[in-house]
Amino acid sequence: MMRMRFVIVALSMFVSPALAQTQPSPATSTPLATDAASSSAFGALPGRWVRVQGGYVITINSVEADGRLDANYANPRPLPFHTAIAVRDGNSLKLFFELRAAGYNGSTYTLRYDAANDLLTGVYDQVVVKQKFEVVFVRGKS
Image 1 (cartoon, rainbow, N blue to C red):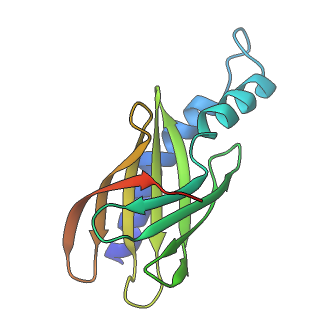
Image 2: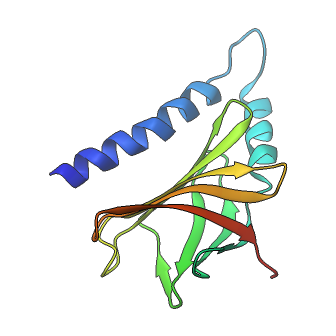
């Protein structure tokens, strides 16, 4: 029950700002312009991202206009994400990933894209051992 509340709260933090930003004002933009802006903002995310602390890998294959990510995780074997989403937050991008595979049971990554340094930085919440870790992902070679 607590895990479900956490997921709902975590997703609402990311989805609510995304919804607010994708609803264009009639006087200033059109839906097509919003979709194009989102696509270009998310364009930096696809690629292979390697965690500096341990070599775990997040591979982002593509990003939908609404922020849904086609992504997977490797530690070292590939694992699917239960949830993988990116949202715009002002001029920055936030990413949220949830793992539900055996041994992870709802562990999450909450990351921010650092455009100036081409990094993903944030927190890994390993719920099984009840620990949070500051993490950094660098873009790996394809």
